[in-house]
Image (cartoon, rainbow, N blue to C red; front, side):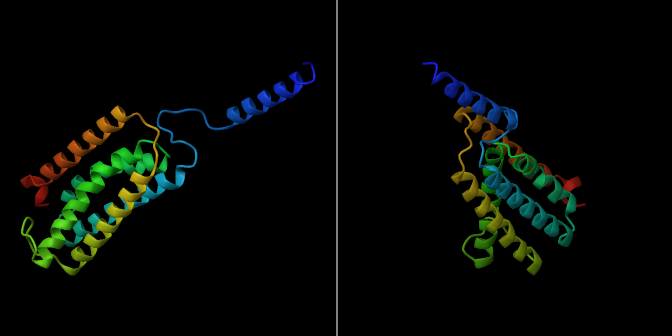
Length: 179
C-alpha cells in the first residue's frame, strides 16, 4: 500500500490545487464553458436595446424606450458577468419583444391589426434588428444549460416578465409617452 499512497496523495493535491486556482463559487456564476453563450445573450440584449434607442430618437420617444428597455439591462449585466441567471432574465424579455415585432410585421404586411401606426423606414429596419436579436438570444438561451433549480429559474423568469409588462404599461403614461 505504501507504493500507492504517495500517488493518491499527489493526485488529491493536484485536484485540490486546480480547484483552488479556479474562481471561487458564486451563486451568480455560470458553469465553466458557458461564457460564450452568456456573452452572446448579453450582446443580443445590447443590440436590442440600441435598436430601440434608435427608434426612440427617430420617433421622439427616447424616455419611453428607456423605460421599455430597462428590464433588459439585468440580462446585459448578468450575461457579461457569466451568470447562470442571465438566460432566465433574457427569455421573457426576448419573447415579449419578438411578439411585439411580429405584431408590427403582421400589421405592415396587412395580416393583422393588433398594433397600428405609421412606421418610418428606420423604425421598420430596427424591427428587424430587434427581431433577429430576440431570436438569436432566445435560441442561445434555450440551448444553454444553466444548472439552476427549476423553481428559482421559474421565479426569476416570471418576475422578469412582470417587470417587462409593467415597463410597457408605464411607458404609455402621458408624461413618459410624449417626451
